[in-house]
Length: 278
Image (cartoon, rainbow, N blue to C red; front, side):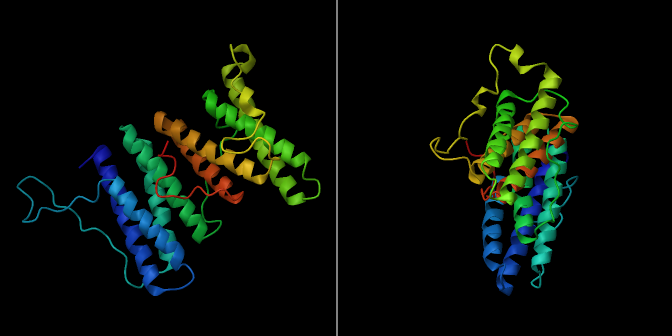
């Protein structure tokens, strides 16, 4: 078993281990039981999406065929810390699988699983997940129009919310931080591909309004910024799936960072397979 099939099998085994570890945590009881229940249910869906773990030959492998290694399962004494470790190892495996995937279907699954497992890890152990957001230094080629428009909309919304949050220094500071990060990405993308205004239509034009799903009559809010980060997560994931080489992993890192940032603004992105629906 080599290439994409080996990667798929490795991810399926990670999903199986995460599921069994979550169930061990549930059986032990405690404050993380509810979260572990969600993780176990998601692991079942993830395992199904991956096609399950390859089953060994029932009566021994035919001559010339290798046997399967038994599927690793968690000990009955597994703890929340063990579940955090399993999720972290799963996310690392998903990133590695994405880096080598030839099939776009597998690439999309790997990119999605990395986000899902990273978010669940972070929820159980805040601060344990590190992912590099897109920056000026990693934006060495023009972003697709949709991604550029979203980053510019984030810039505008962050600046607007900061201006309206004088009485809330925390929200103001976070808004300024997000606006600054988005501005750097927008400028780097335009520099890499020439002025956006030189095109027949400026892809940044949709920036000045409410994000998708928000009422344009509402005032800018943290919910707006969180929604934009989630949309950026999906766009970066798409860039990762269609990309190659280092830029594929840059986009994958950025998708995880965007999902974490969305969650910090109260917009939930954690699900079994983020970014694969619609």
